Length: 291
Image 1 (cartoon, rainbow, N blue to C red):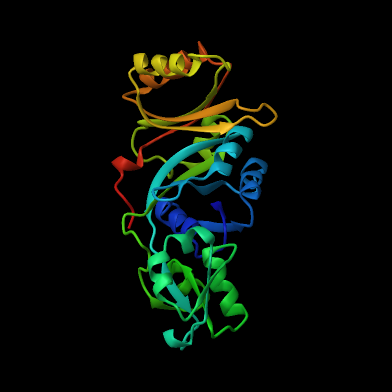
Image 2 (spheres, rainbow, N blue to C red):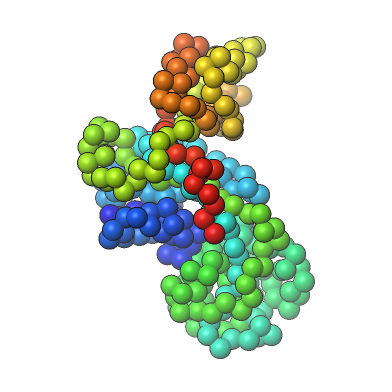
């Protein structure tokens, strides 16, 4: 099975894919530079699926991924939570006192402010990817530079962890989704993946919808969901391109049984101009947190 991720091997997305798909035989990770490239790989069939982050407990939602979920024919099949651990990583033999520059993705740097503010000997510099910073310093033979990345990046590129767990907050989690193409029928998708992506009975779904731009329309849609009996666990809004101050709303809903989920979608279709069901899956809350 070929599964795409955004970023380099050794990244948190790589770790999430390994944890989420530990039951998949012959898993091949396909790194991609851009999120749009990940979606294109799934839709074109170059990969069997993709693992992408949708939300971090500290940084918030990944806005670009919401936009791509609406635009592209993909479907969420699985959800997982990954505990995010940041480590200061350098080439083998480099001592902490030798480090003068620290590279990483801006979000990772912002989540390690306390450590970096106290590490006055080095400048913190933004880089395109967490694991990519370790890949770069190893390829360039840099001995005055460290990266902030998962421990997997050190193993992937032959580097060493200088300081483990430099994140400001231990309660730092990212929610990931397994995405597959929605071009094939559910039967064909099931046949391709077999039982490897089935984790219990679905109890959560994600839906995108749009309402007319007039007073009370959003309240009416939410009232319909309440009447259907579902539990609204998240709502996110994204602007509609070319239509200022109009929005698409994304909701995560918990439900008891397929009939309740069907009723919720039908209720939205009765009052919304656009409704797209993004996927039904087992809530990661019922699976426990991968650490």
